[in-house]
Length: 158
Image (cartoon, rainbow, N blue to C red; front, top):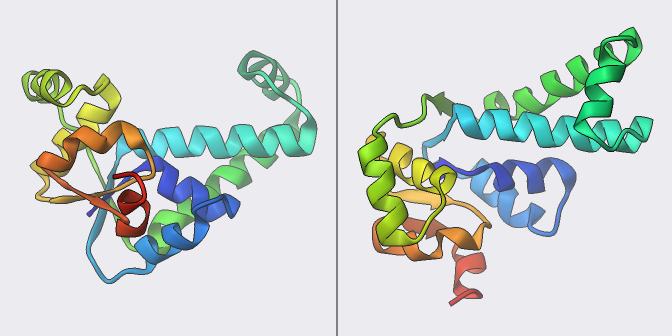
């Protein structure tokens, strides 16, 4: 099963779908995710925690302050380490993203997806994941080629 960014995010932030995210992450099913998902997850978790703890709202402001503030840099580092620990805690294998741009373009066209989402589907298929766990309704059209999970979420979106 390929696990999308928002599953990790809802789990660590106790978001609206935290219970469903926990079911996905604790399932015995083999789980993969991609480098892009890890990058996106790290960025949004760090941005959220910096906003909550330091009141920094813009990425540019964060970059400027990181260059000058060692304690902020240490906070970002530790926040990143905690975020990365989620993947190991739930035995999620991180795989390289698909580089098959022709396939990605075809997925974009036929399933009405933006490049990032089409790349997730291409990556899942390349690694044999027939299921994608996500709360992103942009994946709705892809249900023809992958199973969307969790069922409780997707059944309410039918």
